[in-house]
Amino acid sequence: AVLAGAVTRLIAGTLVQLLVAHRGGRPALAPILHLTLLGAVIGGVINAGWYRWLDAAIERWRGSVSILPPHEPGQPPTTREVLLKVAVSYACWAPVCNSAYLTAMPLLRGESLAAAVDAARRSLGRLMLLEAACFA
Image 1 (tube, rainbow, N blue to C red):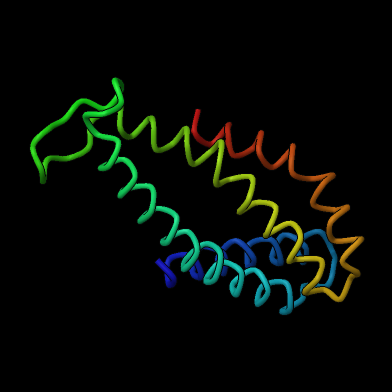
Image 2 (cartoon, helix red, strand yellow; image 1 turned 90 degrees about the vertical axis):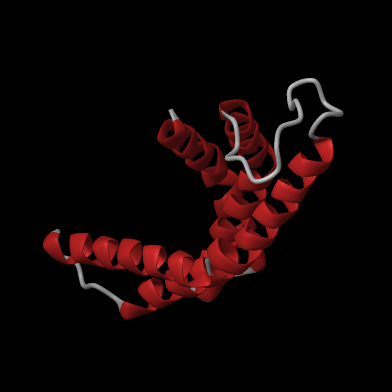
């Protein structure tokens, strides 16, 4: 999970810097490294913990919540379970994770905490809409 989080952000950061260069700007290594670090920590370690917790919670809820009927152990998750996991992740985890990214990136660039929080506040809604579009 850590490697996957880091590699996907490394690729994304590199593509952004290639686009910057293509548009005549000067690409920079620091944003790529910042994004890769955040991908490893937030996208890897912290996300893995969230999904371990969510999987365990779904197992605890199974049979006691009408939308999660019991089923045989070891069976793949049902469509309903997958949709529940996506909905809970989007509603509960995505705002936290996205806010962390949106706040950490300006801080890593040396901006003040107030500026970083303001940037996150201004961008979170658009990022959440983009994420919803990815699930649609």
